[in-house]
Length: 131
Length: 136
Image (cartoon, rainbow over all chains, first blue to last red; front, top):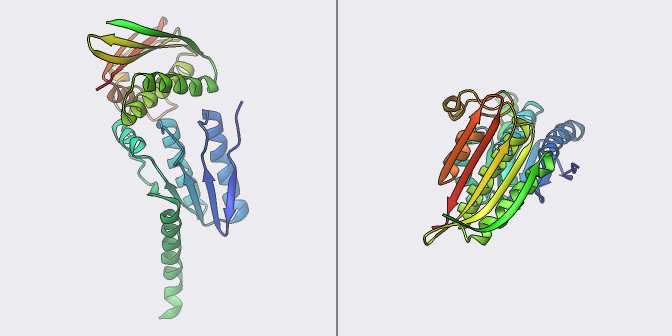
């Protein structure tokens, strides 16, 4: 029994909202599905909404870090949004710092973070022609 | 220490049993009136240990119950498997030690998330981990 988490697309952003308590296989499926969709859609950003997630253990934590690393390799930035305070406290005590994963407090701030990252990158590539 | 209510036994033999383990422990934590942060810590520890039982112990059981010690109420959860066991417990409880599949935070991390943590293991005879969280 493993379910598929829906992946939504808005412009060049992929949005995943985790709404149920996922078993480990579903977590791995999500990782694979997202990598495939990033390439298929040529998305530049991935937002993972975990506001409904009651616990993040080392398995899910590792999935978030892996998704961020894979996406970066496929030219997309990942932002994890909506982490509950109790989840953050627990993650730190567990010893998972989620280094390399960008976070934002909510979806709105997460989208703005991606916009800024994208703007910054376009700015960099445009610079040589401007001078 | 007395047992207030036995919540029975949950077999841990498949991936979705780890999800069931989290749900059972969350219900106990709520019944015990643990704070939200304490609930989250206990359920996270239970998730790590249930996965250990499944992946490293080759399956086993979880028993969770509400306990009382004088005026204090708490939740105690016991994870038992008859898998290969752990040869060097001290090493297994160090951060970063891993048998190869995880991040090596399962045992050491879950110990930090609970009030009491006891582990018994013998090579070839399985592993039993008992965790306790007391209501403040």
